[in-house]
Length: 389
Image (cartoon, rainbow, N blue to C red):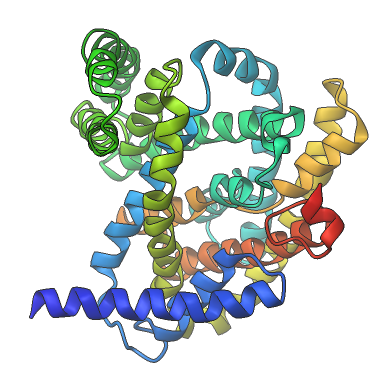
């Protein structure tokens, strides 16, 4: 019975996703929008064809892990340090501005200071998934615009991981210096372990059996998931463990092959992840949160491109690059949803506040995807010229 339930669930998700994706491609929408909409339609708050999304949520989280692993594979450590040093001020300053906007909107609509802070924190980041998925499969990804965008996203991801850790600590009863010091020690230790294992074990195995594709596929997945579990055991997040696993292998000549071979697996779980976002959204709360959510989403969609354009100009980027990076990063993030889920689970915010964050995030996903598709080269661009660029 359990196996039948799993197969039937996968049938509903992927047959439905294929159907809605076809409509999305004809209208030049992002496929991510189709996946979210499908979750709303057939999930527990829609037609209830899937009434228990817990298993789906856990499967979707695997998509985030593989995404960050592949992101790390594309960034050699020396290039990563160089890029992060350039955009650190941009990421920190912009995050404070976006957080302030979220706090102000929440406070003006009557939410408590604590809840407004969580709303603000959730709006600090841009979506790594949307940013990367809407980059064209051309040389742009490896040129300057793509590098700037990815480096900003990486810095935001590091900030987001610290934020999630802080929420966890706050929910456990306050700031514990022992926990903080443990994490500060765990992060460099994790890097050292990854370097040692990669240099003395992993790379030797890959070199010995590099002609057996199935083995490379298996050992890559095992390496990624082993580092996520080690990170968890050390008090860090699974996401940071996956990212470090990718960075450790990035210098290997086979890293590009690993990245290409794992992309279908990543996409499989990302479909489930975005489906779970829609399936988890309780539309009964929509009348309560739609006005503040719409205003919050509109503020983020307007302010983020402006701020990124201004800050990147200050760092010497030209207007074209600054505007494009700004528009491509002009949405909330999957980390916004994780903040909402974690904060409500720790009783730091109400269900209504959580659904406000979710609604605003989904609105920015939809609007930002459509704006980028209209204006810039993407795999589903509005014009043939943009698809060729």
